Image (cartoon, rainbow, N blue to C red; front, side, top):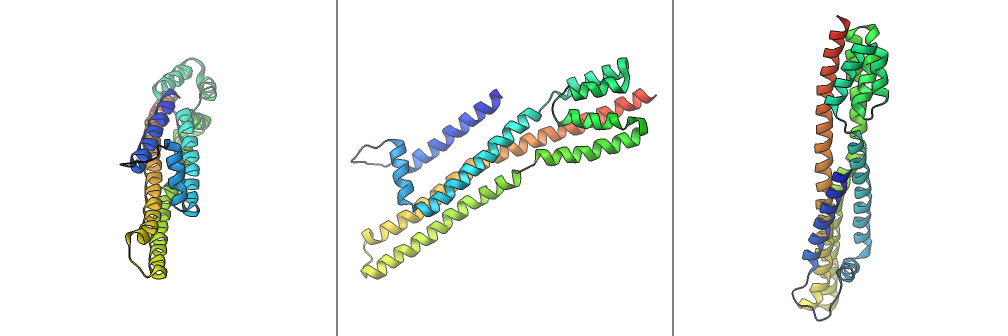
Length: 240
């Protein structure tokens, strides 16, 4: 859990640092705090589109944090579990090994239990149970990750849509004023650029979480596969 907290802290600093550097002004006549500046830019960027991007960030972070907590709770010491199951099989048989799995957390222990539960039907039946339940556990690990990738794609798209609408507003103001002066054009262009920046910042933050989650899932799946092979070897040895 300590690693999760450290990771979230680093990601938070990166997030606020990116926004602060983006919206820092070269020369300011009136001093503002970071939160005041952020709020002002949010309002200037058209709250309709900025609000949708903010919702995408909140939902994406909620999914990411939930997945990180779940994956860290699902991480187990597979070598220790295999050794415990081996010892239990040697001393107390299948029921003792199943009890070890019941008292252990994580998907690997659940897969072991399913394999041990079918061992009386033969090694092939146990292996099929391990493979089938491994697929179920993999689905649990990847749950809601597709939604996170959706928000990563959606945030910059919403930002670009705000950019297009902001440019349209700029041209509308030019048409009404019948003048292409910088003051007339600047307002619409600023709105356009702000929505793009917020969309890209949200996508970058969520992408960091997404990559961490995917790498964590890959690590757990590799451990599951290695442990499953070790379990089948133990069962073959136990049956002899």
